Image 1 (cartoon, rainbow, N blue to C red):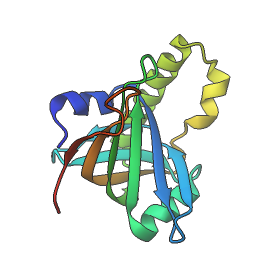
Image 2 (image 1 turned 90 degrees about the vertical axis):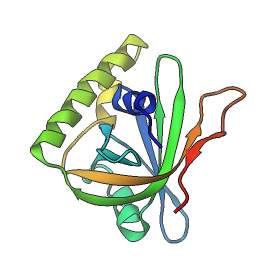
Image 3 (image 1 turned 45 degrees about the horizontal axis):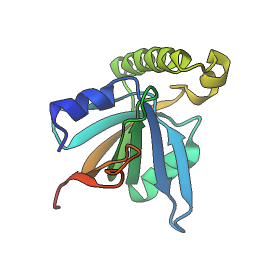
Image 4 (image 1 turned 120 degrees about the vertical axis):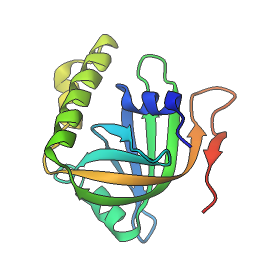
Length: 156
């Protein structure tokens, strides 16, 4: 599912937009603050702030459905993963890894002209949790002819 190239992309300083929905299918949105492929090629760990995104956390707890869009700010190369997630508290190593991601994404966004004070409200690991996402499909979302095409899926 996630080959080395896509795993490296997800782990790089890319914007991480998280989509969920509640039981009435009302959408929820959040920002991730660090993601990486686990030892299983079909699983990604994503750090979220339960403090900043309580509705997203509630949606994941209620139904597990999640879609995460990863977009590189310099050229808008974009992929989306969809699947189901479970939550657990982040450990110290994951919080440290998240902090490294936040430094890298702030730097990448500043190179595109965004001021740190505009970026800062998007990024916090306060009350950090890890969403372990079991991937069901991956889509190319880069603007252009391939946008919306399925890169991979797993039959479950």
